[in-house]
Image 1 (cartoon, rainbow, N blue to C red):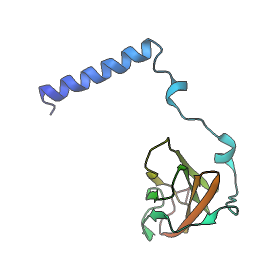
Image 2: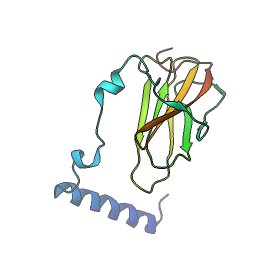
Image 3: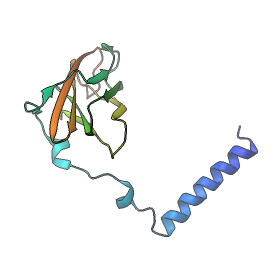
Length: 147
């Protein structure tokens, strides 16, 4: 049950969003990230130009009970990290997610991914014009991509 204070906070927040949307301040173009359709539709993964790095940490379960929701957290201490891409090697479309970072932000991403079967989860970090990678195998007992 909502108490009065939480109700008022929620109402004010919703009102502010509605006003911003009606004034054209909050438009889908201004709040959505650039979409690289070709990259997310690619059927193969090529990270051969990336250098293996111990500075990238992948936190994921060794065994995923359900491939439909596999929690994955990527972090790195590589200086000037611009983005983290997550690939699932044996998925039909390997690129799973891309996280872009601004200046002075911590390179950290946490999400849940779908995995069709046991596979390597590969993290690629772009930093200062170079690519770095790390991987971790996740065993899937129940497939999440139609399996």
